[in-house]
Length: 63
Image 1 (cartoon, one colour):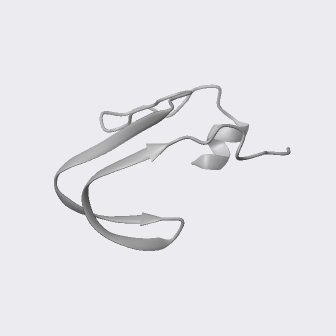
Image 2 (cartoon, one colour):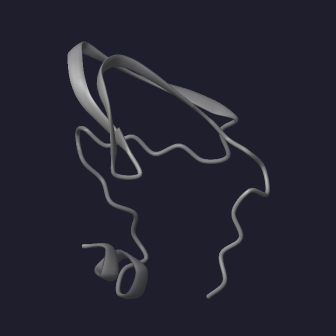
């Protein structure tokens, strides 16, 4: 799917459970019940709320 998105499609993925955010300083994901959460392959337990914050210019991508 990712290969198709990056190479063969101009459209972003869409769906009922998909949310797209751009240039957000922070966003929070919430769930009705605890859900298993992992980040970068590390299991961080079950969470009902996770907040993500951006770090400007932290990642450089070379193509």
